[in-house]
Image (tube, rainbow, N blue to C red):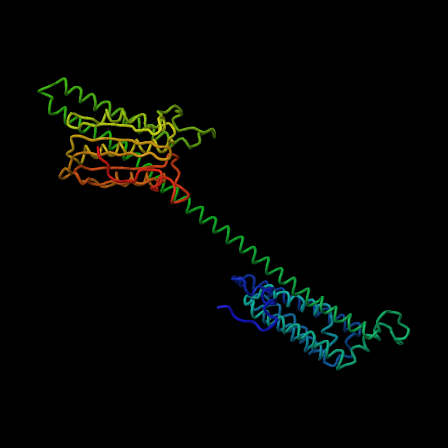
Length: 477
């Protein structure tokens, strides 16, 4: 809850950063010892200055004894030992010290070392204050002390006459300025104090804001570093999932084909050697294709590595790899997946003619892999004797549908990674996936992608909508 300020103080509080949600860190132990060391240095400098004044006779008429002169000097200098650990105490203490010393021992208070000490104490209070609201009131108190001191010096003592005489003005009538000597002395002293206190406050505030901006830059840099690390981790996970999908689809398809063909060869080995030889040839072909696709996949993964001489290239030096599968390769895939016990039909529907050529390569690859994985699941987990593959391509979307007429084969439940991979492919390219048993029997997998493979920016548009595309509902065959 925001705290209210007295009338006229809100703008001052904003100037001092009372509304900034940042607290300057306190000093370290090493910095505290540094402040103490410099306070001792200033004590020695102030003591030397006092002794020089005593040698010139400037403090012979001071109302206090020499002991109290040194006590006043030492207490002011030692305030600087607290300038970063207790900045508000330092600023307020310097103001009170200046007032008391100015009343009791004016010559000591007016020495240059003491004036520098007061300036630096006020600067440190503004620069290092962690409670900016309290700082607002402390600065107000310091300004009040300044005016109290001026009032005491001019109204209650003979300060004006002393200053006039120190300037060598015996007869005010001889002065030719626009203002009288008394007015000039008062205004000059007030202006000098405004520059003195105002300069310390402004420089301290500039120092605090500089530290705040530096902290903001450091915080933003750390946020960027964390976001970069998070994005890098996400990219690694996404790439691992992509590799897992590719490996699963390639290996599962070819292994299932080899299993079906090997089983067929075993059954007809003695009765029909020619059919067995054909089945074993299919096993050989599928194994070669599996090895080839695995090598292509590994080559793609290594394509981003740097060679020893710093040039781009994979570790084997191969640059010519088999192109990634696309929609045109589906017919060959279906021919390979077909078996004596499984008939597979294929149909490509393009609206308009030639629309398949406009489908982006990532979408074509995903369509191929989904058909590949769906047919592998039919062979492994279904009693189906027939499966149909339909690919529909329109101007804005492409849809893959694989249906079969079987039922689940007992004892062949899989891990579910294949279907998970299909759903991930659809999600990655902005599509929708639907898979499950059909009401009329069999199983269906249907996935739809936008042609570009880019998720729509407007949820009401693109492949994820019902506008411009057939809804994902079951259709007759």
